[in-house]
Structure formats: C-alpha cells, structure tokens
Length: 434
Image (cartoon, rainbow, N blue to C red; front, top):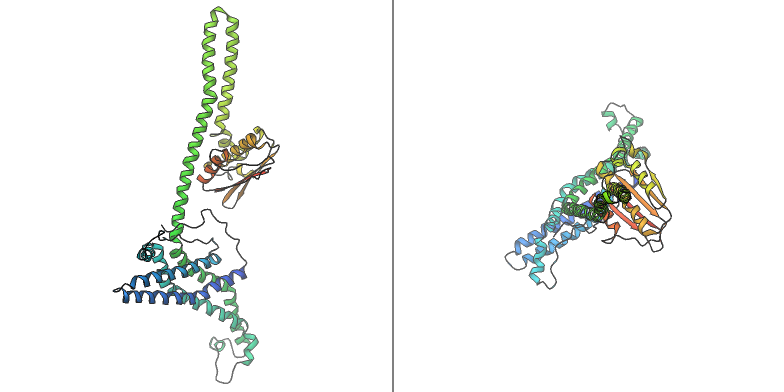
C-alpha cells in the first residue's frame, strides 16, 4: 500500500533561515532542477519508447520496470531536496515490495501495481515543463541584477561612439554617461531587491509540482491514518473514563448508599423500642449522606467541574492545585481565563483532564514532595508541563494512569512526552493544537 510516511509522529519544522540563506537555497533548487529534469525526461521518454518497441517480446516489461525504478530514484532525490524549499519534514511513501520468495516475473510486475510508481514517472515527464521557464526567469533575474548593479564599474570599457544610441537616449533621459549609468543601475537594483521574491516564487512552483505528485498521496494517507488513530484514541479514552467512573461509583457512593438504606431501615425498627439507639443510627446515616455527597462531588470534578465552565481554565486548575495532596505550584497564562482569551470548551476540558490525571498519578505513585504545573499558550498550540521531584519510573503502558492521558491527548490531535528516569524527576509535557 502506498502513501504512508516513514515517520509516524510529527517532526518539528526547522526554523526559517535568513533571507540570504533562503535565497541561495531557492536559487540552488531551481537552477539544479533543470539538469535533473532533462535527465528525468530523457530517461522517461527513452524507457517508454524502448518498452513500446520491445513490448512484443519478453524484454518490454523488464525495461519498463527498470524505467520505473530509475524514476523512483530521481523522485527520492527530489524528495530529499524539498525540505530546503518547503520548510517541512521529508515524506517518502512506502512502496509496494515483492514478497519474500517471489518469482522473477512477480518482482517485475510489483512496481507496475503501485500507483506512486506511475506518479514518479509522470513527474519525470512533466517536470521539464515547469523547470525550463522558472530556470530561464531566475537566471535572467540573477544576470540583470549582477550586470545592472555593477554597471558603473565597467561602463567606461563599453563602446559609446557617434551614432550608437543607448536605452537612456531612447527613453528621453538625455545623452551622456550619467543617465545611462543611472538607468542600468536602477534596473539592476530593482532586480536585486526583488530577486528573493522571484527566487522564492520559482522554487515554490517547482516544489509544488513535486510535492503534489511525489508526496501528495503519502500525506493524504498519513492524514487519514492520523484521523483514524485520533478516533480510536478518543474511543479508548472515553471507554476508560466510563469504566473508571463505573468502578468509582460502585466502590464508593453505591456502597455508602446501600449502607445508608440499611441504617435507615434499622433506625425505623429501633424507633419504637429504643429511641436513643435510633437517634445514634440516624446520626450515622447523616454522616454517611455527607460522605456520599463529598464522593459524588469528587467524581463530578473529573467529568465537568462547574468552575471550569463558569470561570475558565486558570481558576479550575488553581482549585485543582489547591486540593492536590502534593504541594503544587501553578504557572498559567492569566488571559486564558478572560472572555476574549478563553480556549475552546473541548480544549479546556482536555487540558483540565491532563493536569488532573497527572496530579493524581503524582499523589499515588511518585512519592514526591513538590510539583509544578505550567500551562502556556503558544502560536497554534497549548503547552502543558507537569514536573515533580519524585522517584520516577512513570511510563505510558496500558493499564497505567498515564495511558489515559496519552489517549486523551492523541484524540485531541496533540502529542505527549513523558521523561521519567529511575530516581526521578518526572516530566510530563503535552502539546494540544488550538
């Protein structure tokens, strides 16, 4: 099956280079693209022509398979060059491969059943149509920029005899070296200042064609795979939350309510024979009622705490940190609680769940004496960090508390990183898109 990237996790995009470095990258990409396009076009045309001529014999298919594999090598080279222009991680499709022990003809036919192989060959055919004009435009821009900007240094060496009319005279700028030098230098400076834009446009045009044909299927399948993983993670997180809620209700409030019913029944029986014993039983029942209400409130906080809905994430996390069994320091952007700065309700709920579950794990397993929670808004994402000074050893294995956090974060399209060496400290870092 084609189109699945080699990397299953998002790779951070490299920071944008400086203007001069990007100009050199774009220019190198465009200028080097012409010889590669000529090689690819020649290879594709020759391979198809030989295949058509030899198709009546048994040599046609091996020649076509060789042409496809050669086009794949050129496509891999193009994919290697793309990140410098697109500022994105390299994506390579997973091509169909012959099964172990396959025969000669099966190995020959495998690349022909792979749609990406035909897209590679199509790119080798049509790349020249885009490369030639972009190469000509960019090379002309470089030449005019260099020749015009430096014109003042070699104007004296050019012939300017009688009867030789230059461009400055035709434009009515007068006769003499100054108008001529000014006009040529202005052309050069214009091309020099617009050169980064022209180079960027030409490079993006070439790279856009390559990305569409060589990585478009892979990226589409990667997005589909990511959406499926998020759907599965959301279902897993929901199922885990329901199982935990059912277990907590069964072990806590349900048992207390059963005991409350028994106490009330006993008090009714004692009421006529022993009013004092009935009074003590009713007191115990009242205490049971209060404890049950406290447990129900604690369970409701894990579902949808009212303070989160009414006052926003900062207030909800502050209340969570105040109730934590381990002393917890909270650092959060204040504007996340303002009407104009609040996050989406689903994102707030996910962030609250991540911090709540992380603090629960700190209290149960870390043996820590201090914890710090940081929530920061970044461009396009929300970062959550939970750090403690405990004994470490936390991991994301199924059945552990952190696996629920991982499912919830993955369902929201984010990523979770846990660093917890033996002996500590433990650092949980989550990034949620917004």
